[in-house]
Length: 336
Image (tube, rainbow, N blue to C red; front, top):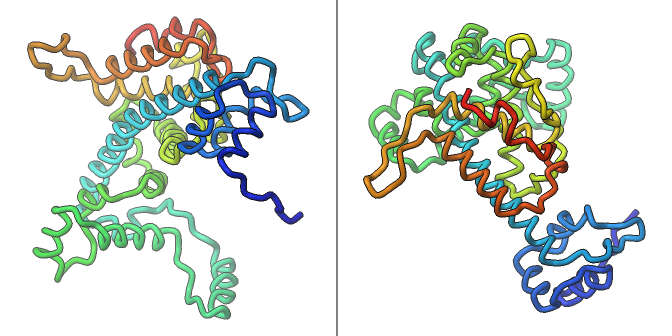
């Protein structure tokens, strides 16, 4: 089917929404649509839509906009904690890797044995097709990762990169890993985590008190969530395809106590972030005399999250995979 819809002016967009039952001031709606396009706003209107495409009676612009504002604030809080987690994971993995293999150990593919490799037959077929198309030989997953890391270095303008180029550039085409990791993307970090040797992964996971597979599962889910937040996607009521594994019941009974957490909703991701942050930032931060008593990052983050929920009490908790008593869950009520 060919797409034949015509572009609508802001006024036409507002009239269409009002015509479908959205209650609100037309000029205010036009102003909102100037800041947030029609398609994006429609995502927050979707739960109010009926089978005839009209909205439920009494659906107001103010109600929908409050959900949009709540989601935006939630993404900001998530990005704050995910940054801490990403940096900590990367730091731990790189520390244990270079301790074993040295600063340039990542340049030797055998030190990253779990990068995906195609069978020789599959490589032959793909390379033959690539050569026929005059595209050259196909890079392996490891080569693609290393090339991406070098490209990030070549594009970088950070002072430590400029210094390295001036001082060591005639001898080294790549940065030592403890520098290169600062330029690593989330995807690159996840590839690295999945490709290191088992003993390196276990040591990194032990830094957080995790089994190695939990570290991989949670990192994958956290980084997928980060991409949603960074691209300003709807998060609060989203159903996530990448879900973190829940720790086993025998050794981690708190994760299996009521109220239960939906596995594919942001409520579980918030719990994972809070739990992980307690392992990363347990040290109380220094405060000036005129500030409140010093607190750790996890406690402060939890306080900000609770304040956000209190500011928007009308947000349906069930859509987030949370019960009305989620704050009483042992993982939220007490430090772990």
